[in-house]
Length: 444
Image 1 (cartoon, helix red, strand yellow):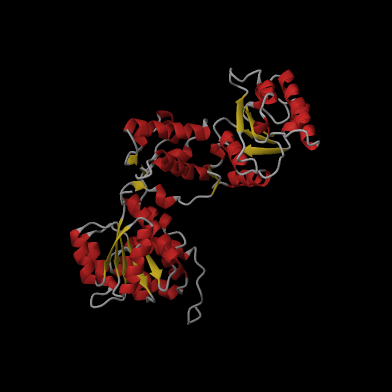
Image 2: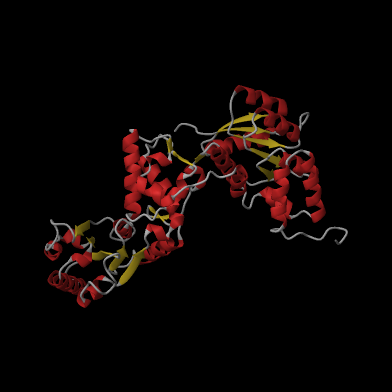
């Protein structure tokens, strides 16, 4: 897979630099080590880097001076400072020179990787793009189903609990929400996973009116597996009654040791069916021991970007990067109502890939359907300061500022103002209302 990011690590402690190079390489990032400020500047003169991770206390050129020289060469490159300890003055200097964050030594490698992911995301956003490999991976999943939202997590948890049993399952959801995928996941995680999964569609002309007959003719092998009937509410009353009788008879045969009974899963369309209204009581009793609701995509916005990442990864070749998203695209996706749910999303991305002849480098708003753009409305470009604040939520620099006294915060503001970075003073003012300051030594 081609490398998307190049990172420069500068630390005069060679073991630290070497470890970071190895850890970052495991995450697919090309990393160059420099063991002094001078080596770092030489590397910067030869190639462009997406991120610099530098130690504050290097000699003879310290990290602050290196940061200053980096800013002269590239004002936009994100920089992470590493430090075992730092003073108010060094923190102020780092802030004034637009450091992304401070990585406190000693650190856990997972914390370093997490901070680097955020810094790379910030750098990509500055260039108008978002990398979903950095932003949303890894997301919560169950049996290949994205479950980042609370609603989907509950559904998947209930499915996981019922999968090992023989209970019949009724899946209720709008078209395109992934009802069939959920049914397949239940079968795949059940003791019957090695047996056949028979899928029938009550809404198709081929299967309509023959559901009961097809199930009644299942082989002994199929009886040990799972039967999944899509759009169960499309069956007429007589067909429902025959199906209910067959399932009851098959269950009795299994209890008597005469023959196996297939596990039954049915699905219904929530947009045209209310629970209990379209199934006769006889079928409802035997087909719906457990009811699982699959929420429409518009009600689970936190699944949108993880789903996008999952689908783009599936559509991309294994040896290729997934496309970047233009910075306004996530907002468009989240504002759209998704009447066709996940199936509509997959169709849109598949069409984009087909038009591009493979995975495009970037997905822009211009390749999205017109109705999505109309529904989203105008989207103003984000300001740089807003972008940085978004990626800095809960970071170490914020923690350091939170531990400072009011006098120390004032000192930082004075130092930063003297260096000509008045926007940072406004940022400090916003922090002032969010932080609980400890009492200063003067008690004021």
